[in-house]
Length: 410
Image (cartoon, rainbow, N blue to C red; front, side):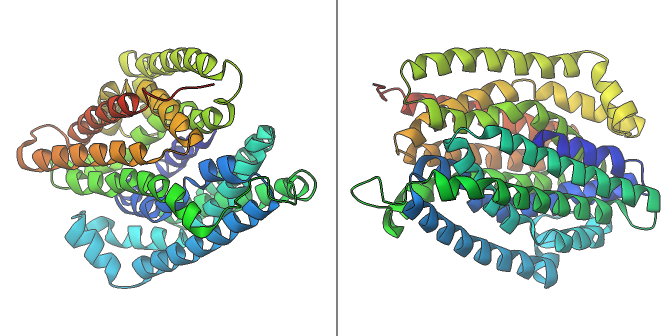
C-alpha cells in the first residue's frame, strides 16, 4: 500500500501544468534529498520490533527517536531554507536549472517528513511485535486517503504547481498516518508492555548505539544512491526525460517490491518460532517468484505502456522510456525478498555488521557504475542507472547470503 504513493503522485502531477518539469523536480531533488535526510530513522521499525520488550526499553527508544528526529529535521531546514540548497542542487547533483526553484519549494514543504516517519516507525514496531499488524494497514490506508484527497484538491483548484501540490499531499499523508499509529499504540503500551525490564541488563545508550548504528548506516548509504542516481542521470544523455520518468518507474518498481521490504520485519518477529526458518525460506521463494512475475508481466507485455501512458498520464516518449526502464528492473523484487530474509535473520540474532558491509558493497558498485555512465553512457541515463542498481543489488544479496550462512536456528 505504501508503494501506491508514488504511482498516485505521478497520476495526478502528470495531468497538471508542466508535468515533465514538476516530475523532474520531484524525482531529482525533493524526493531523493528528503529520503537521504530520513535515512537514519528508517530502521527504527526493525529496532523497535526487536528491542521494545518492555516499557523501560520503549521509553528509551522513544527518547533516542526524538533526539534523532530533532537533529535530522534541523538538517532538513538548513538544506531547504539556506543557500546550501543551491550548492547541493547545482554543484553536487548538477540538475538542470529549470528544476531548481520547483525543487526548493517542494523540499521546504516536506520539512515534517522525517519526524513523522520516525514516530510512526517506532510505534509500528510495537504493533508488529504484539501481532497488531492490521493497525499498520489501516494507518497506511489513512495515509493514502489523505494523499489522494490533497492531490484531488490541488488538481481541481488548478492554482498551484504539481510539485507544490504533491509535496503538500505527501507531507499531510505521512503526518496523518503517524497520528493514527500513535493513537493505535497507546493501549498496547499501557496494557501489554511489561512495566519491569524483561532482560537482566535493560537497554542503555551504548548498547542501542552498538545495535542500531549499523542499521542506521544501512538505509542511509542505500538512500544516498537516490541523489547520486539523479546526479548521474543529470550527466548522461536525455537528462530531463530520464529525471521526469524516474518517479513513475521508481513508483511501479517500489510498488511491486513493497511486500519484499515488509518481509524484513516478518523475519525478525518469526525467525525464532519452531520451524520458523524453514517456513520463512519457503515463503521467500514463493514471494520472490510471484513479484518477479508481476514486474515481468508489466515489462514484457503492452501492460507497461498502458500503465505509463493511459493510467500514469505520461507523454508518449516518457511512457516508452519508462516501459523500457522497467525491463531492466525485472529482478529487483526477487532479490529484495532475499535481502529481507537475510537481513531479518541477522537482526534477529543482533548481528547487524554484515548488513552494513553488504550495503557498502552496493554503494561502491553503484557509485562506480554511475561514474562510468557519466563518462561513457550513450543510452538514456535512466536505463544506465537502473542497470547499475540491479547489478549492485544482486551483488549485495549474494554478500548477505554468504554472511548469514553460519547462523544456526534452534
